[in-house]
Image (cartoon, rainbow, N blue to C red; front, top):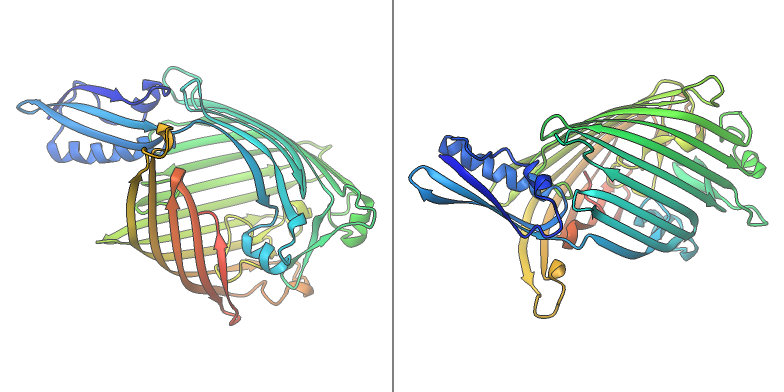
Length: 441
């Protein structure tokens, strides 16, 4: 089968080169039929995973014997999204609902502006002005390709935030928050980051980053936790660097049902002699999504991280309960340590997959189709956190095998929004109903 030509329809804003960068199919090349069909399906998924389009259709049309022309039809999303921020400051909805007694003072509010396709080249710009529990200013800009061959990219970010209430430690495997009597600012933090990315093939990404971090805390914080900054006082400053390799071959980045995802990273906190810390962290995420036939699929994800030193500043503490590491049934807990491994599993059944045409009521084309999917899930997660310090107040859950299981209902809708309703029971015999706003992995 020879491809005579490729045409693009619907990309009013997006440059043709951004779409064709995702395609293996090439004009003037002859393919075996089975290979060609597989490439059509794969290219359609890759274009959709740009997250620039509501719908993508890659379709061949026969123009002669053994000759086709390929039509790529897309429906663009609304790229400039001003929005009001009204989000919980806590780790998840269950933490806020159960541990924090539904306290509305723990809400962030403000304004956010996202431009997800600056110049039609998939460049992304975000501006955030936030008040409430965390007062913050954040600006981000990323350009995926800075060269004609579309291999190299750059991004930059700067943020500044303050808190009057902060987590100072954990006790009985739950976060302990502190606010001083005068309600003064307890922590001020600033981050600046410059990142470089390289995409040598369709599914493989390399990135390296260099940044600077500065945090200052009120002296009252050290009364609550003298080792909040690992015995260096009320100021923590350091340069940091990171490297990450990512292999991403999922059919849908927001809620995958087929494919695989691998991320390997190393982070170095403290590059120079004047930096206040010297820490090295390794991270791993490995997920597999396997169709089982019919409407069933299996999702399995492994995540792990490790620090080399026995104790970190509390702002760098990791563990189960902090994304991406969690065990269902332990949503209200934080199990902190220096090394951890978590294995998450879901057997899912597709209940609904529909798309409603609401163009008669919605004059904006980018919102004229309302997709809706629903999945039933049976879940089992397990893992282990190693706390080398064996803190007595947290020994109930650290340094021991943990697991949780349950069932859930996952909803996927407009612009890949995911909402999960789950009932889970952990190996302590405690069960509860949980609501989450992202895919589990």
